Length: 102
Ligand code: HEC
Image (cartoon, rainbow, N blue to C red; front, side, top):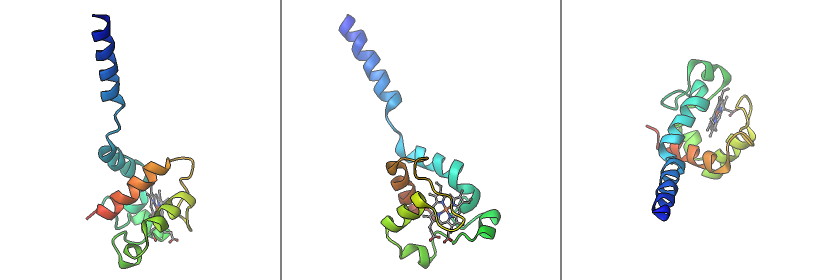
């Protein structure tokens, strides 16, 4: 009985702790990036004033994932740096999310 209870607790923990990455990434984008990059990645009015490019533009598309990860980590121009604020995994997922945005 005790083992069963222990297993249930462990199972519950695993379910709660399991990172729902896709949802998390979207929520992360919304909370951290959307202010400047806009819901569709084209850039919010505020972001466009700072010089964001459409994340679907050929200029961005031709950059490698590594390039985009680097910009997100280290910042560029008015783009804030997220090194230390987001984990490498989160940044990688965000870049994937940006690529998949329509
Ligand atoms: C304060 C506004 C602001 C926020 C918030 C912001 N960005 Fe940016 N971002 C910029 C600007 C401005 C640029 C263009 C930098 C340049 O080329 O000078 C940029 C560029 C980029 C680029 C490179 C694409 C390009 O233009 O070449 C990526 C990738 C990117 N941002 C990802 C993100 C992610 C991911 C987040 C959220 C974690 C985020 N940004 C949050 C302003 C912002």
